[in-house]
Image (tube, rainbow, N blue to C red; front, side):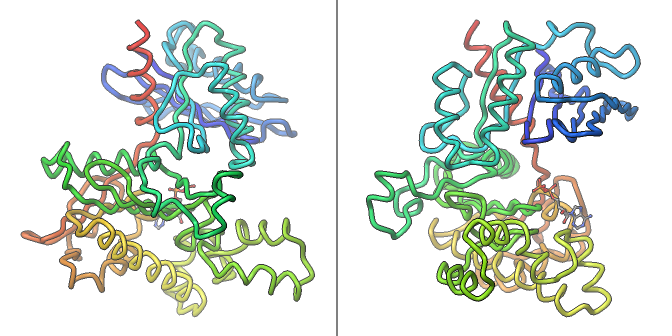
Length: 401
Ligand code: ADP
């Protein structure tokens, strides 16, 4: 079966086509600037050939039409007809507490995604637009929703509750949800496989998804029992442009002095804080590494804060699981930045967590980084959220037959 995986943002739509017989990506691409001037699609065939389509995309439906033009293009396309796509898997940010796994999209599911818009105000409307656009263009094809929050629904209440008046939880569903769920699920399952301990209820893994957005998860027996992002992706470790966890009293303090309202404060916490805010240089870890190499104090500080927060999370998740068997690094920074990986575990030797510097000299491919005989295995495992979406979609669609 061929499966189209769609990740719709407010002005973008990323896609990949999988051949599930081999689990290989046949083609992928991205529609950018949807709804604005100068919209275009960049399509990449698996053999490396690229093609750009500069066509006006007033909305997501137009984008999906253009995706099909690219997919059936005699030059760089991978299918001859839309009917070759057996199913579509959609990445959806927020499933709230309603979805603990992927589901076939029905009217009821769409309504639930809509009901969760207050929890994911930037993403859920775009995800819904992507679903509706695909349904319009492919009415007879099954659609599956895969939620970023679903994997974390196994957290116990002591991990997901905030110490606020209880009614905020019962009335407004204020609780920790967590994100990057497909990534944490994928890399923890891969680690279990590498250890030959799939299905072991006692296997304890800390997964570190370090990218533009970063999150950690404590995964025990294949189930998430704690994670660092919260009701939104703002909580946890400082990130590219997000502050991560801070004393909430800072908000009023700064708002009074900078004469800004809560909307502006929230924007700053999401877009102008983190690595960018501290360094004043960039949110990109490559830029920070370069600046730190030239002795830039604030770039060095930003990276040190990221490392410090990450170390604390790894150690605290080992504590909540009562031990740790493996630590996994993944995503843009986790897969590429050897220095961050090394320093994040540098002080954790007392727990049996260590990286062999020679083995750590690797990027973007699965590798064991811990020394031989180490008590705790440290792995680099490239994440593959799209494959998780494609696999879930296939599994759900197969059951319909
Ligand atoms: P997201 O999916 O959250 O947007 P990614 O997981 O793609 O992010 O990670 C993107 C980040 O990875 C970039 O901002 C950059 O900081 C970091 N990154 C990518 N390549 C490298 C590299 N070679 N060295 C260090 N950091 C890198």
